[in-house]
Length: 247
Image (cartoon, one colour):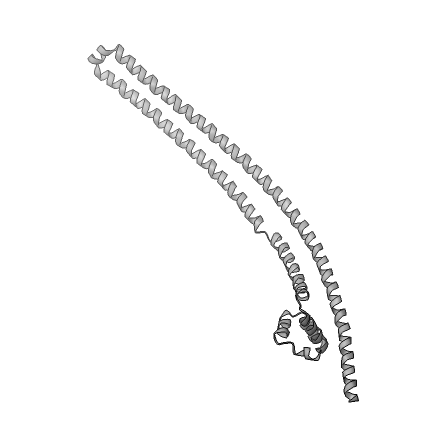
């Protein structure tokens, strides 16, 4: 009987000591979590500052490129406007030539009806020459219009190439690893802290007591593994925590 009392007393003493040890362990855990949260806040602030500076620098570069592109587009549009004015002037001159020629024909026919009747072949010759001149002028207008259209097409092709270049620069910035690396590091830090906090904050009283016994009952290596293993906590709870019967 005396031996059993001594054994119970010794067992209670060890349990009491393990309680003190576990309280110290959880106090150290809470201190470490607070330290990690503080470090995470500093890291998040530094990462935010770096990302903000990178975004500002990138925006400045893109704005400069877009301004240069806008200037080029305005110049191209001005060239198109100038070409259109030249084309309009050519067409106006051509219309004027046609009207003048038609007026000359009408005047000639009115003034020389008798001669035209008597010398119809001469009149036909003049009309043929006039038609040839008109066809030559018309062909020249067509050639000028085609050249103008080609110039406009080339100008817009160059403009589209510059737009594609700027789009490529924007896509390169969006997929740049400088952003993703900073974001991944921040996510990893948040995930590490969240696991530690969730384990300690989500414990029930039984889980807490069971964990204390597991830490006292197991080796130090096993205790550390149990403490950091959310899966083991679930196992202890689901199995009814057989260690609790000695508590």
